[in-house]
Image (tube, rainbow, N blue to C red; front, side, top):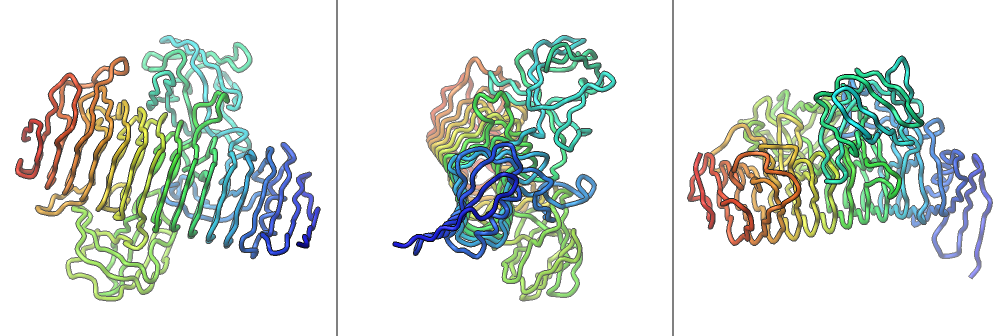
Length: 606
């Protein structure tokens, strides 16, 4: 077989890449590292060389590749759940590795380490199909999260060792955090007790008001009023800006994306965001700091965020450790109806301040009308035309006249861009918020995972049309074979391990927002009394689970309370569970009849 080689083709910033074309084999571009030099331009040239080469392989040789914002791609993107007009007026994103309209591309990392500088989106796929990215590690030279370990704490002073990756200066007796072309004026703090796995909200305010002095390299003494500060020696205080001006990675309008064996050591912004994409398969993704690196946080906010996707989302063998927000969130977006222009034309508006600017409906999409207060669907249609009027508003034309009962203030939900979800064999820990949020109408399987000491609900099934405007109802959820340990400590008294909590402010008799949820054969290791709460849910099963009491962790944070709280639910079964706890489990029923539940536990009405 004759082989055709072309090398070297380009050398940029000292980083070499070469092309090889092997007859009747795949087109290949190979990158060689040049540690610490700026690889951004040469990598973009290598990416461009793969364009219009279906089946191409972009290969990185092992080593370190550095990406700087100065030579990165700059492009405007509106991304769900990120920032509003005041927080980040410009939506121009800074992108390290940019893939636009690729088909059939494999990016083989071979264990390469990608190190980013400043505030950037690490990699972005836009209108791509059949893409595989694998075997890479991602980190930042200076993460936008600052960390310091408390050495001593007293009412009048704190001494802390600042992590070497967290750059700071002491100016006029005040500690100032800074990074590569950025400073910090807004502070969001989380205190980590790594020994016990507790991650709690904290405050930078007493440190901001204190007088700081450097008493040894990297060792700072803060003198001030710390009488209300809850930290203890050994805890790590983690601090970040609250503005999600970039995201960790972004996948938009893509199909058949495979992420495999990827270590996200740090991400700035909202983690890996997938928006209006189809068939996403994520395997062996670790969102966690490097071992032995000394840092405790790996993500500025979420780990993975899925907004209005469809097809299958599959997440297997993932590990989330050290995040300032939820490891996984899967949802759609309700847009509010603001005007009935004609019987078939509606004006819609993005309502949440951090979600807007992108097309949420397309010609051919099926849509549902939703009464906002009750979250009740009352009619369907098909979009024949859709257009953006402004960054906040859309106009959609329907295939048939809208229902006569449509009211201004109701919402339209996209029923086409709805995914199924599988989360299997994964671990969730070291997070002060929830473990997994899911609101999707398609089948959901949450199986054989470990939820270890999440600060809030391990699993939250919400749906709302008045706060985050995250849709929609679930119809088929199977939660089995999981282990839940010590979850919910940041939510007392509502510290349920699992919460099915749609935000329907009006209850409609006989209408259930969520249906067909089975929670079976799981291990619950609880330190407090609440286990499960559900609202407006039909055909709910909680059976064959094992509930054990933890000792040596946290004392119960409230007086004995019901293990289960059900509000306006129908056809519930809570039976055949094994309780090894020092209290008698009780089911509290609110706004429902005892005829709607079959249980072998005691019940009481409220």
